[in-house]
Image 1: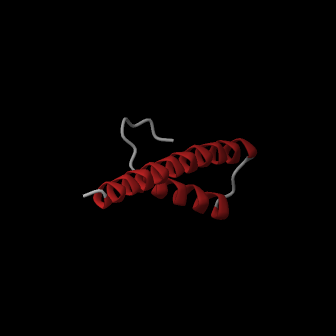
Image 2: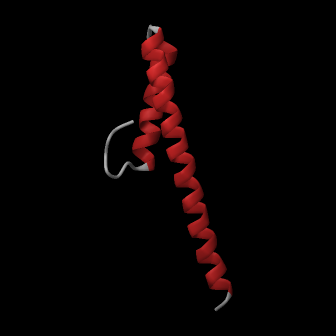
Length: 68
């Protein structure tokens, strides 16, 4: 996974798509495949966390509106 301070969801998704393309279309040795799968899992976890956080924020926003 890129060692950026602020990875965006879009960047993570783009990198995931690149990894999937490489796995499907490029000859990879076991070490390369292992590294790509590890990176993909990290990116998937990042995306899941980002989506859950966004969902929670949206729920809080709508719950707050109902009180007004």
